Image (cartoon, rainbow, N blue to C red; front, side, top):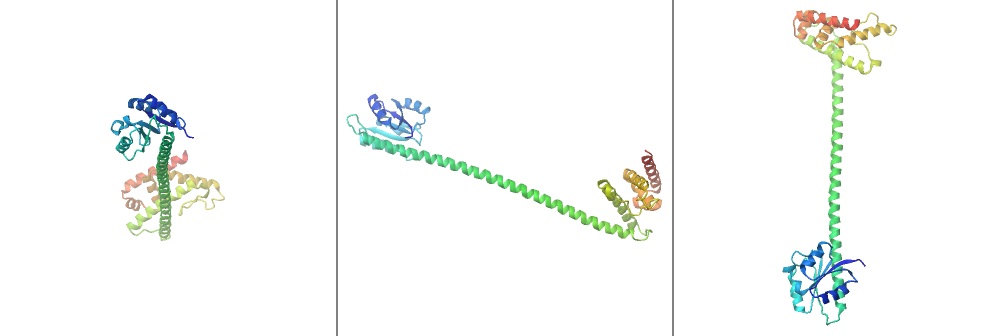
Length: 306
């Protein structure tokens, strides 16, 4: 049998001793002769049943002293008084009465009342534990649901980011293909430039093509080729690796120039434009073109000499 804490609150030592002996078979007995002593006992023990003498069982005097999970048994010889005291207690307390007197030897009735109170208290305790467990489970379910929702959100975010990244790559590739076709179409035309728009577009195309080819050659040097339209001293560079290496050094030196110098050098020395055409395409003066071209050529020569 599960041991319980049973409080005996009775100012009569003889009655208290008799009730203690009756309750010993059901649990640990905590005798107290006053309400103050009973409160002190309950501070250090979890009392399941409180057996109160009718002289100390008024709810007004006991208010706040007992937990709602504690079963209350009021004992005494006056049955009418016992019923009156029991009605004073709120409905959320378990309260029962037992007519008890030292002159009457009726222990069986007290045992029945005590067992009934213990059973009710146990059920109340089990219900409380079940509710606490349910609350914990609900809280855990909410936590798990929140975690799942967060994980799904991260997965969706990563998927969307990856999709956007792929769409951007495809769009960039499509633009590159279209730009390549436009460049090839322009380069297939005769060399003469007839309008400022054609000249500007040709300069942008040459510059973009040069940048793209140079970046590609840095990433895949084994598959790199020479820019279109550039003629080396010997077309059979495969049979002359020294010439191919020299040409590669020249283009690396051109790529290392500042943008203004590089554009001028490509326009004049690669595209074959005149100083006036280059000035018009770059939006500057012929004198500036000549100065930039001189510095660009000097920079390339110094790079090759080093």
